Image (cartoon, rainbow, N blue to C red; front, side):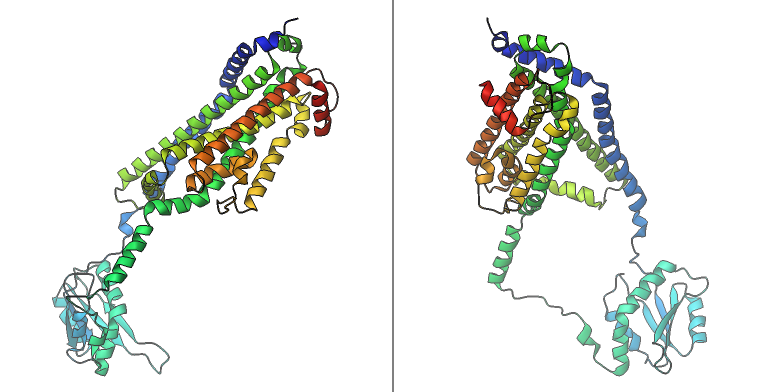
Length: 459
């Protein structure tokens, strides 16, 4: 008798793939989840970023630096006529120094200040019995043209510059506090060259690589973990779907079991990649829209997130195009590898309730692989050992980061990718064989050693 399944395997794969993919894309849950997360990824950044800039980016909160005071009437019984003139030698944040005039008492200072609309009264009050500190009070006359900003700027200036007046009262030369002004500075050329070398070493691309050396391993593991968590169960459920159906006999004579497993697995992988691509595209558009709106609100914005986006332009020279492509292919191969493990768990189950025991294999292998790379210092690419890149389950976690960081060659990365892809295909072939062998199995799910004996006897 002719084995129809073997002869029609390619046709069976295509039919199963198209049927599963069509049902997956038409599923109400799939569509709702896809477009809901797309809208969230698009609208949240585009709305939160401008809102944060609008509420927290008020440029009016910048401290004032200009001062319009022209005359300061000083009341200080310990000062001489020229004591406060030393303040005119101190650098100020405004352009012109005020004129300091010493008065005999407060009444005289207030009377003179009333005649000048851009003047203030400065009163020195000495502390009593060493219990209170000396204080300076700045008084603003009535009907003055000055405002509170002028008083704030002048008071801040006095807090740092009054030490000049205190020294002048004691007769000390205040020039010791003045900054040194020179027209020529002799430089050590060797030190300058060394400094330039250090600056060149700290280029933006190197800084970006240093940051990504920490971020890439974590992003790789989290991305694979959530992909496996979301879609691994879907692969297993899809593989086990027809086992309790009366159509099982028809499937076994019309479609090869391996083609069935391949078709279902790669259909769900395709739908997953489409979903992830739409989410990532929506997220990029959302941040791009949010950045444009923030710059429209405030062209001189200093928002940290936008500064980070601006620094990403230095990543263009940090990684080569070939390394980026191989990294993406390695991530995809890792996802296929663990989906193959999930398909194997579905193939070994008789009904959906058994998946809790049979489909734990891929999660346990992921945890063990993570711990093995972490505790051998290869998690951050700090180890010189290369055995992890040749073991498929650890290569998924190690190869992408090590490739981007340049600790392995392109040849090694290609070899690691081929080993991972080959092992994923072998697992899928094994899942197809287990599927055919367990199609009419009844009872508790077999243990791994029992399943191995059944496979050995089936040969």
